[in-house]
Length: 181
Ligand code: HQG
Image (cartoon, rainbow, N blue to C red; front, side, top):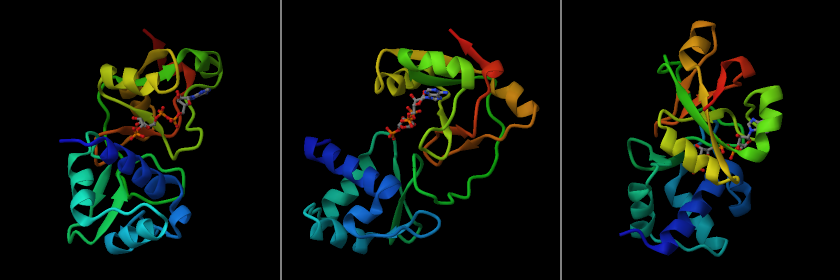
């Protein structure tokens, strides 16, 4: 079962591991990892107690598999979505023909001029699934799904990456590779 408090804790972990480790006095290593014991202690010291069982449940049941444990289980990191500099060692891979980006209607004017830009994150986030893209877009307002001509971009030299939890990533999508459906 996914408890409501789990969702809150999961969001808190995302914030610490992607954006603001300093809010609990932590630093991530250059690849984004942090020691699990240190993380739990730091969270406890900053008023967010989380025991091992709860922590392990949150990581294991996360519906987007947002977190990864190291092989020895001692360290954890976020799989994607960082705004701070970490090197996830992602290798360029061949994308499918088409990928999808969910955005909000109010961003379209600017997107039509600049294409998709990464704003605060490391990459522009894309999905292989238009339904997922719609959900991502809904977070920002009335959702719009854009089609990205990924194969064509790739052929013309743009690199694509795929995070451990299946999110497609690229640096910038110029307007000429975007289609409004
Ligand atoms: C928009 C979630 C104006 C872009 C999701 C988006 C994802 C522009 C917003 C992950 C623009 C940035 C990332 C331009 C792009 N002008 N607006 N030229 N180019 N935008 O949150 O893709 O649940 O940084 O369309 O599932 O919404 O957190 O990116 O609306 O994978 O795990 O600028 O976050 O994952 O917003 O979401 P975000 P996103 P989690």
